[in-house]
Length: 306
Image (cartoon, rainbow, N blue to C red; front, side):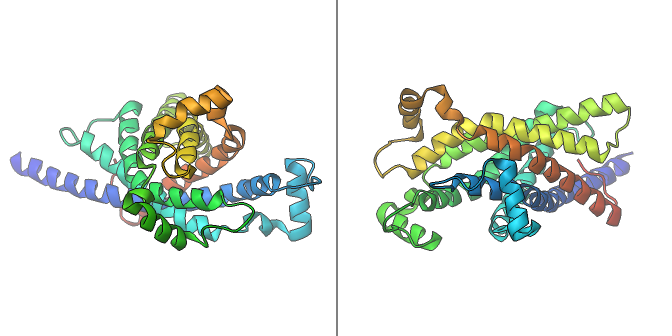
C-alpha cells in the first residue's frame, strides 16, 4: 500500500510540473488567439479616434466597410506584429501563475475539486506574475502615447527608458506597479472564477464534463467582461498616475479624489464601451485557444491536467 502511495505521489508531482508547463504554452497560444481576434476591433477603434476635422467615417460599420473596400480585408490586421510579441508572453506568464495557484491549493489533497472561488484565488496569483511584466511596459507605452503635437520628448521606447532612468532611476521606470497589481490581481481572479463558474453551469445543464466549443467561447466571453468590470476603474487611475508630471502625485491613490471632483463617477469608466465590445470575442477566442492547446498536448502526451 505504501509503495502504491509513493508511486502515486511521484506521478502527482509530475502532473503538477507538467501542468505549469502546459498552462504556460496553452496561455501563450490563447494570447495569440486573443490578439488575432481582437486586432480588427483595435484597428477600427484607432481609426475612429484619430479622425480630425471633417469626419471620414459616419460610424463603426462605415469605418469597417471603407477600410475593407479601399485597403482589403487584411488592413484590419495592420500593426499586429507588435502586440503578438508583447502580449503573448504576458498571457503565458498569467496562465503559468494560475497553474501555480491551483497547485498550491492542491498540495494537501491533489484529488479535490477546486471551486470557482478557489480558481479565482489561483488567477489572482497569475495577475501578480503578470504585473511584473506589464507595469514597466505600460509606463513606457503611456509616456509615448501622450506625445501629440510639437517636439516629441521621446524618440522611442529605449529613449523613454534612458531618460526616465536618468531622471528618476529604476523607481521611475517601475512607477505604477502597485496600482497595476491592484488592477490585475483582482481582475485576473474575476476572470478565472467567472470562467470556471460558467463551465460548472454548462456542465450541469448538459450533464457532460466535456463541453462544446460554443460553451467554451461563451464562458471565455463572460470571463473577459468580468475581468474588465473590475479593471476599468483602476486602469483609468493607473494611466493618469503613470502619465502625470513627476511630483504631481505622491501615490496612485492621490489621483482618485481629483478625478472624482473633476468628472464624477463616470470619469472612472472612460472607454468601457469599446473595451466591452472587444473583450467578449477576444477572451472567448483566448480561452478556446487555451483549451485546444491543452487537448493537443494531452493527445501527444496523455497526462491529466489540474
